[in-house]
Image (cartoon, rainbow, N blue to C red; front, side, top):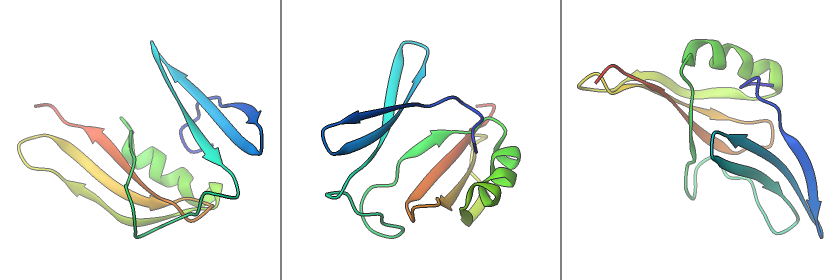
Length: 99
């Protein structure tokens, strides 16, 4: 909903996944009993958000909220923001600059 990119739902054992592809690569969002949401501990995955303001405007409609940003990076490296998704995970968003 936030990125307007289709996700393919899959189940592997007791784990639910939402798989996404982009070019030659792919990734997945994974949910299961052994995984715990964290807004402050652990790694922060960063996702590409070329239109950061548009993405941030959709976050609350999808059940999340903005934690930080947008913040301008030095040397025209772009901007970033952190959001908390509807499950409580902290996610970084990066809008590329013109470096």
